Length: 426
Ligand code: HAM
Image (cartoon, rainbow, N blue to C red; front, side, top):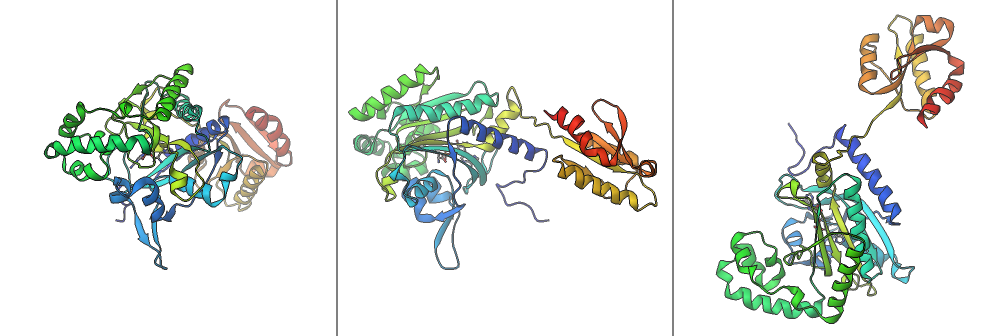
């Protein structure tokens, strides 16, 4: 039997209703913060990610789905969305203003990771990016957006972890010191960190391996190396966070797995999720646009794993329970009279044309099983057409919620819909 590839999954009803509910909610919250939707291609030139996420990162080195197209171009399924937003920003000349531009996106990302709970090979992210603002108010704005999404979904007990990784100028000295210290302890580092040591020593700081943790425990942190400008940003950023009552924890080992970050980095974790407890992660990337060939433009943003948010919501205080209702189900009584299913089908089209959601039974089943089906679909009204009704040119309408049943003339169905159905809708 053919199965979905490892690390991917189907989203079937009723789960798909929860996804739709979440997406609507995300669009609503984004609008409140004035973020506009951007849609970029699912695949890009591989070079885009090598030059932004970074050649020495796990994402680019080990996890990217790369392929050549028929013309020999090197392409990659996007492992994340920030690089594409930056590329689009440059390609469409958005640096010319007005600035800042605030974008959000929802879409599939692809990483060849070891699948486990909360970690997939195709997963969906909601991301938000502000381009063209160096202000720490923008750092806080994206965090407020992230926190308000979690609150909106009833997730209490989230923890905001923040750190700063400075700018290339102040980080260079830190990097150098880190390399010389870690080199002395090389044999105590895990195999991956031994490889990372010269190329990406900051990543050693967030390695979860206990022996690496031991090595990095007493190390000086980036906070001790910040230049004046990065220090000012760090202080102001935390001041604004406190002014809007957002609690945070400074995590000096938080460095994030993407190379484009400068200054602020953050994650929102929800401990009950277990090993993969980061609901979202983000930070500032003031050098990214320039690095990709654009006019120097600062940026800040985050991305949230939608599977993780949904699984947290299931475990949270207010699980998403979208009420899926059908306005009408048309039931046709079984008989030899071909007119009945035909009239039923016309009634379905009419009700849909009136703007209602409506379904029917094409399988010619008994009245009882059609009623059961209507019930399963959570229909508000059932319209019954049988020999009797046809003779009188009426339809029997039953309110599934209130239990009443009445006959309505077929040519007066519009009035009934207006008065009884739409009225009850609003
Ligand atoms: P990231 O930390 O790589 O950052 O991913 C953000 C979020 O995506 C994670 O916190 C997690 O919820 C989810 N995620 C990542 N990998 C997987 C996976 N394999 N399976 C399920 N969920 C996953 C970024 O992608 C940056 N682009 C965020 C950003 C935006 N920074 C600035 N702007």
